Length: 208
Length: 316
Image 1 (cartoon, rainbow over the protein chains, first blue to last red):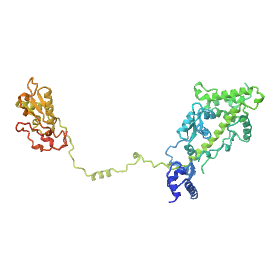
Image 2 (image 1 turned 90 degrees about the vertical axis):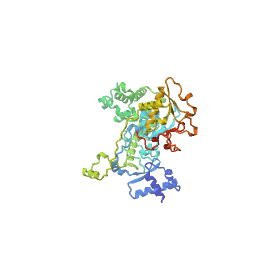
Image 3 (image 1 turned 180 degrees about the vertical axis):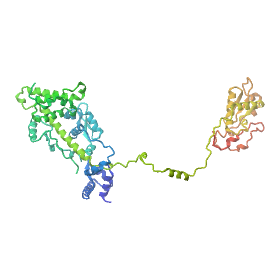
Image 4 (image 1 turned 90 degrees about the horizontal axis):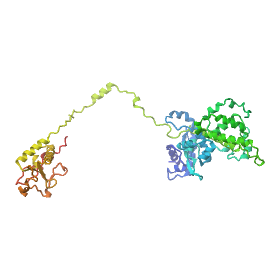
């Protein structure tokens, strides 16, 4: 039996992302490097043979997923209600937490300008954020961070996959946090030719 | 008030924003909207105009909406403070410290968050197009009531004919009323004690082959004892029970004093026997049926009740 077959069998049977070290548990002869080599071999094999699924790196692990172009066919089987997409306020709050983690509720609310307690609870219920630490200040506030589920939900390999601020087409580029005066001038320059209203429909950050 | 913004399309339809305040996710959202709507430079916010527009937008917030509107009011207060600061003459050293800077910073930060949110949304949608194992549900079990009933009556009838009917067994169950009356036993005991001074309990059962006779005889004995019509005597547990005639006013069994002590129903401990129904698992050593109810040589003999040794299941 080949290592690639063993790795494939484990990944095939799993319905959640598995880390390389978890896959390595399948056999004493396996270690992380061997597993990753096998995964690369499987990835190119699937690509070359035109399979309807691919082996993606997801949420710090690996999982076999169907390719996006088959969604229309598979969605016909969608009889089990799937968790709905996150709402606008939830996404905003989640974005703040993702980029500033660990972060407390008060700071989140200052950035959004509105109370966020309920939204944070929703995000916790959905399992995409969790309390990761307690702050130093008065009352040792709860600090929130994102979870593996967050990475899985958005198809990120790790938090490094989050869109980088410098990639953002808007106004700001690397202007958080802004010092009052110099920022005004610098951001002014950045503003040239950029419409504030333009919300760029960014391509999805996708795992390869 | 400054009329320079009187031509603003927003103010021309003053109530348009107040109605839709719910649409905005907070004061920053509203502020961004106002700024974009008029295509003004974020870094050169005409603070007076924007403040007035902001106030117009929120002026219809009702007292009962304050919980959700507090954030808007706070922002309004901030804007008013900035507006006031802008009007005040500034000292030389403070010239570059624009009072709007903090609001601008927050606006820009918020806008960035909005951009990131929209990217997250795209990523979420893209991720949702790819499925892992277990997405396609297992085939649902068809509802039995939806399944057409394809069997015809002929088939049912045919099947019925093939069934071998079991021989009809009489499954009737009769519940007999209590067949033995305690009163009969009272009469029996009274009759026997008329002839004898005392009698063994087992002897009273002679000739009756139903456990119920034993029960009723005992109850009758107990009842008569309660009515002070006889004495009950038993020298040891499970030994023979004796019933003694009792005359009016008697306080002791007749045998006391009168009868010889040898006639007392004494049994050695080792010879004690118990009725089989009291401990059926203990096999009787002797042949119980061989025992006679007649006492030989004057000694009271234990008498078995024949019917108690049958193995028949009890029937109510």
